Length: 495
Image (cartoon, rainbow, N blue to C red; front, side, top):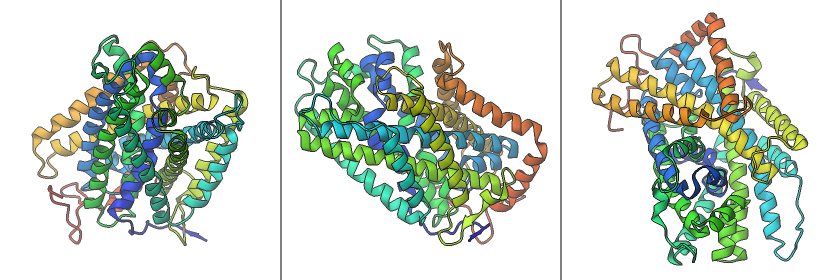
């Protein structure tokens, strides 16, 4: 039995943080996001991650600021809708839905790639180790995701935190071992990886979008605003904590991996060709047992990221349908667990179809030599570009929020989102420059977002309904424009 209702508040701070960590998938990011950057930037991959870190921090400011006043299962859809307007909110929400849908697709492909890397590592003496068609572990992962994501949200959060916690611990251990041994014998600890030595600024900025993949999803816990205790305090803290924790982790671990393989041509080629960089380095620097453990955590991290992506996408569909975009059954919550089960089935069905078609056709071909990784990179970049459109709209929203003086936020803070817009615009430009195929990942993302823009322009009635519904759902005060209520005052600035 299902019912249309608002989600019940029950999650704690750490459980909201777990959803963001689960969607980012730190172990997945560090095991699979660097290989696709080698051809573009060579050994400067750590520099790309430093710039990505700065850009994400600027974007995170907007989410942290706005979630102190607005909390909604639509995440950026509601944040932008409340600050810029319902049409802009719908566009941001549609772009964000694209992000989570494409991430749900790509993370299952990563699950297939990492499963085969684990199987190969478990057969060290075999010249032709047994491998599965990557779609097999992908479909199994999808089935498990369907089971867990229709259970209590708290159960999902605990599973995500356990998986990522183990992966992070082993990454830290591997980092200490590699740095303690001085990195690769051929090149050692090479700090020139943080410079533009031998690579153009254009190439580095073009790669920043791919680096954003590693942080993509930090904002996922904003979709739990209606399910979290004291959301105006806990959601901003979860957002900030997710960005801070992973920023330090990603830059250090990516640097360690580059120097672990070696920054010469041979080392970079080995990095690029690794099906799972953490597993390869674990075997090389510690031993087979360590490699098997970290490969297993990578597999689980890919699964956790998919599960979190699907959960968040379903909440986006639920929020949009509740406000008039989509069939009414998609706006229903499961009576027992309070999860948007019908919306979840839609997400998983789309994911299954796209992944099966990708496996059956052997497309896309991104040149990694691994069909599963090719599928992962292609759909992941589409999702990341969609996400940057959403980030752009949130930055515009927080600028307007501050400029209109709705609350006592110092006007000089507008500089932060303005810098964020600059970083996003530069990443867009350099990522698109030189693309010669309309099926390239950025252009597919543009097409998705263009569809959202068309809907906004041709359906003004939808925008009016969304505006009216959001006003009621967020409890927006007609006088000051904030979500403050007499019984629930806006959080103080130090919250």
